[in-house]
Length: 167
Image (tube, rainbow, N blue to C red; front, side, top):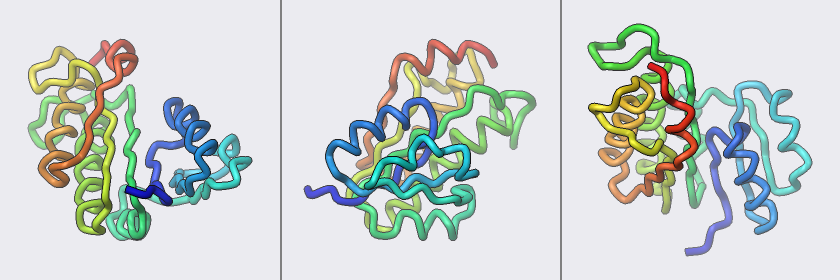
């Protein structure tokens, strides 16, 4: 499979920065949607990176972003967002929005656009019965991704769970 275009959601964060360095050396076109372009200035020097201001929570915007991409990578994660319950789920609104709903919508959009490959970052020890709302929401996000894009690659880095000890 030839990879020429990658959509990197969450590309301005800690993991995204490191991944951008690796992708830049491979001369691959990468689109990084961000809430505020001025906060992603560290990505602008990369000649093959297009930093675009976009609301990835908007389905129409997400559909435009995934169109024409060979690979979509979702690195989105928040460490706070577990206050209160959402729709009867055992995690809070922030975790629900970022880890569950967005993950599922990214997978749906990628599937609908015929994207060849989807990679989704979860967290080690993500489980519906985990002790933290963070890990429970990450598990629900994995399920949403697999339901919408069965061939997705879900990876669970260790560092995520080590920092996600709270609810």
